[in-house]
Image (cartoon, rainbow, N blue to C red; front, side):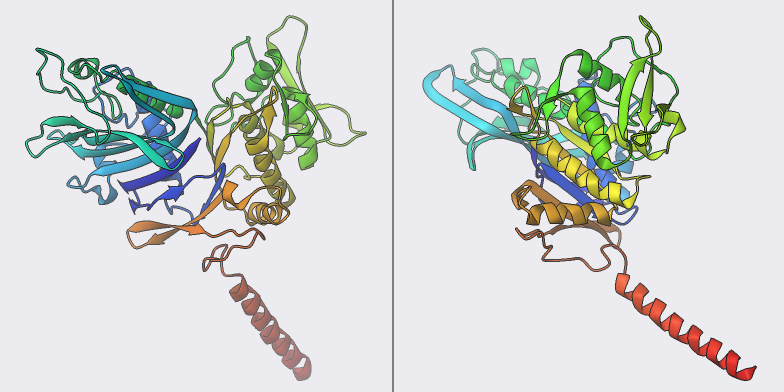
Length: 465
């Protein structure tokens, strides 16, 4: 689970400031304010980690990749190649990581948290190049070990640590190689030292964290009359939710069983999703069935109310096909995952938008096989109804204020500012931003004034007649 994000000089962001990421993090703001850019950087880091090109510091994408950021110049704030693009990522480790110095058996470092700080600059070819990268492992709030790879004024790379003593191997005084991608020392560089092998574990921890990030965009696939499934297990529902039905079938085939939180009944995956759809009020019943025995074609059948006939998902309102991927992804992703969603409330009735907050609260509290899933949701939204329900649940004690983080993005000239909203235990936002959801009072006053003028005109017309 991500705990911290800080970005500098990326697209609209000159400096985001430190961003606390809670189990449920919600980003509000005007269109084109820069909310999506935060997620886009994470996706670019993920596709870089997945890339087979180890020499590329940042894989910015192309037409076939999940995200395409253009050129490095396009990525930099103000397109200023003299500036460094930098970011800090903090996350909780799924289990305690143990680091030991083979040269000093009594020297041991254990931690359950990790932070990665990276700074990139443009090289002569205007491609990104790592200027510095730093890992810091922590136990609770205490940093236990740090490692920094950084260039000096002659561009020579140096490896240092304030808590750990690296020992160079005999006869291996060769220069350090360029780091692989943005987060890993090469095997040759690690072989330069007698006791640097643990750095591979740090890189694997970063890869594991990035691999557990999934993304659902604001534009989702149209429903289909027939869905194909041959038994594969998709990694996610896809950027447009195109694999949502396949994910349901895969989870059901694996016998996955979940409950909404401790003390609730456990259900099979398909039944679990169907129950949420019913609670949202969009349908009464939901099922995925093969069109015939032994076939790989499936159809999604729904009943809009108790006495209605079963019909295909294509023959009911558009909303169910749009909310289904958000529901499935929230509970389908592996434990300890982070799910980034853009506008999950799109095409939904205001009441359903409010109910969606309950779904996402449950997703952060759900259990699978008797164990907490520890899933994190980062949601970009424009829904006042979603926020109102979230505030209500905080006031009711269904979710702790510490488990929620709410931010408001606003334009400030050529840059964007991110304002953390203070949500107290009563569900109140103590620093409500101006024009958060438009200027409601101006509309009310304007309507009253217009009505008064209109009534006066009608009265004058009546008198003239």
